[in-house]
Image 1 (spheres, rainbow, N blue to C red):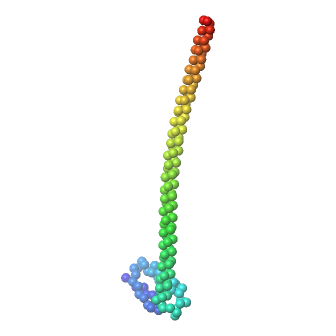
Image 2 (cartoon, rainbow, N blue to C red):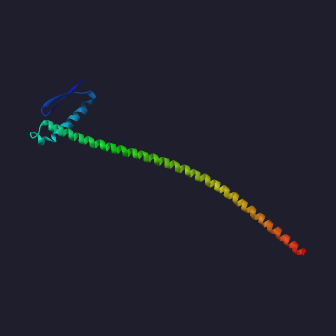
Image 3 (cartoon, helix red, strand yellow):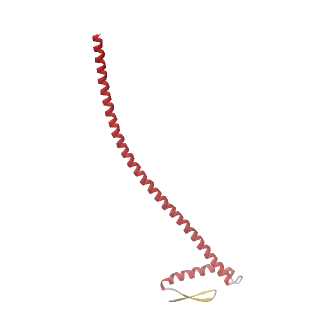
Length: 144
């Protein structure tokens, strides 16, 4: 296992690492050194341990905010997925309802046609009855 040597507060540190993790480790060390440098104005006023502690707190603050944002984004994504699923269900429901409307309209047209034929037949019967009644009345008037 390779060893990476670095220095923090003048203290040499050796870190064992996996070969594929070297670049990541170097980036993390540089980030830590940058974070420690942000507190360099405190050097000589407070101990190195306090500066390291403040740097760690700042890193934790960033991690906390990142996790918070990640969780909010995750909630938003889940909400979007749920909304899309609800929308998909509504679209399917609309399609089914439109299909039902088409079926009902066809049935309504068929029933209207039957109703119109029935009305025509009633009208024919009514006309025949009127003729029969007139004929009967005329015969009665002729016999009287």
